[in-house]
Structure formats: C-alpha cells, structure tokens
Image (tube, rainbow, N blue to C red; front, side, top):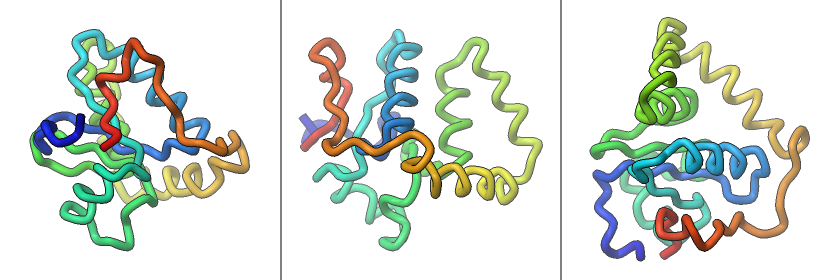
Length: 139
C-alpha cells in the first residue's frame, strides 16, 4: 500500500509514538464507518515523501496534519476539520471556528508540547489491528 494512495484522499498524519494521538486515531477509526479516512504515522516513509511537499520542512513532525482533497489542515484546524468530515453530530465542532485559529493553536501547542508527559510515549509506533490495517499507509 502507499504507492496507490492519491494525496487528494482524506489522510491523517499523526504521531504514532504518542499514546493520546494513537487513541485519537482509534476513536476516528471507530467513527469512520464508511472508511473515508486513511492514516499515516508522521514517521512513515509515505509521510516523509508527502509532507515536505506540503509543509515547511521545519514543521514536519511537529503536529497533526490532515490532507483533504489536496488541502492542508494543521494543528487545531486539522482536528476540527477531521471531526466535521466525520459528519453527523460532529458537525457541531464547526462552532469552534468562531475562535481565532491563533488562539486555538496556542492551546493545541500547550497540549502537543506536554502530550508525552501527560499521556506517555510508546517505544514503538502504533500498529493497527488486522481488521483496519487497510486504512493505514505504511510505505
């Protein structure tokens, strides 16, 4: 997998070593009944090929990135857009956009900078169960 993935798919790039990030991804997988999302750890070869084309190289690996129809969402905008794209009840998260992204991103950065301290860090990157492995891009 990976070579047949088009960058205009809905791809979530996440920190596979972060316990909370992996929980968030499992939550999204649970809600994504139509399997419209693909997932890639930021440390994957696929991410290292795709993200430098979309972000400044200094930004790669610092935060969650969501590519949707070739549009790049970062930090709080990524989380909000993912929840909106799930649909249904989760459209309510659109209301968070009333707050300026600079303010939301300050809160996101506080969380991101402390995530390992608060939730822990895995020694190995999260490996998805066999039933959902086709949604993860590892190459």
